[in-house]
Image (tube, rainbow, N blue to C red; front, top):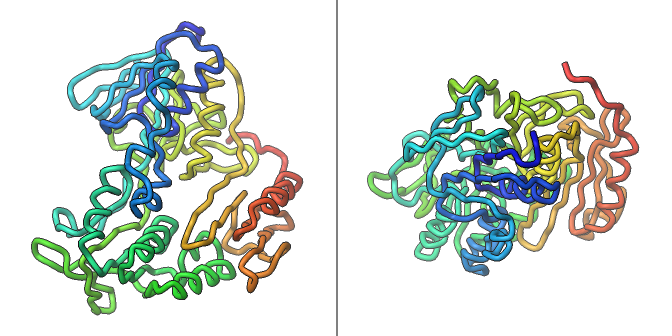
Length: 394
């Protein structure tokens, strides 16, 4: 595409904004349009389960850029109008209001939507947490309640449980895994995380499934698959998310747990995907990969923008994410296979500061830091040193 060509970014997310900014930094002088389903200008989602939910930040503080920075970007933001259809051949998006937007290049950045519990729709007191409105509504409900049940023991569920405890609520966490984030961190570290939550007063009812919720107009409890009902004034459903690709049905794109892309994050000629919705071929891992984390959104946006402008860059990151729970910051670089060999290489478990190394098939695939940021960054180099040679795309 020429430097004067037009670009449409569908999704006014962190990834969408980062793409627009990277295009300008790369010298793109043509029109840039950012289409967003929400009425808000791009904002940051990680604080929604922590600072905003706890009331430590006013909602406006999550904005990623102030008006002056957005004005300098010289992009048109079309907000509050969700994309409902797309034609990859003509690179044309259709919106809920009936707009049709076309461009020389289109970047899809529509993210994910939360999974919900069957039968919980329309029941007061049942929440998911994805948007700014979700966080504000949940905070208002928690402020008037004393008992919360969190359905889900992943990153988001664990963060919400920790935040709600600081607000003084009785909190129960429910889910099928044996410990918080067990499927992601493995038994050694998730066991420490379980002890942390229990020590701070979170009632862990893990290793069990959820059948549904009880209540007529407002939720009164969570029904476990054992038949037991846990009383609840507020329920948060944090059981993962699915890529927001329904609007792309019939578009001509391949959809399979996201928008399927090549190693350049290209889904079709002139069409790219970025952020949580993108599933691309990772040459370092030799596999299709989809990531849901904040750092990835920014890093991938830089590669996508470069490729829109004519580069030929593969995207093969060392994944990174962090989570803050109670007074612990966990940072993870790389990948943590469930059958990895895990050893503590810095600090110690009992001291509350350590780095764990994850090795699989003779290679260091990931490092995890528990309140030990500097040492974790240093250990990241081991992942790079042990990385396999890039695999050609199938």
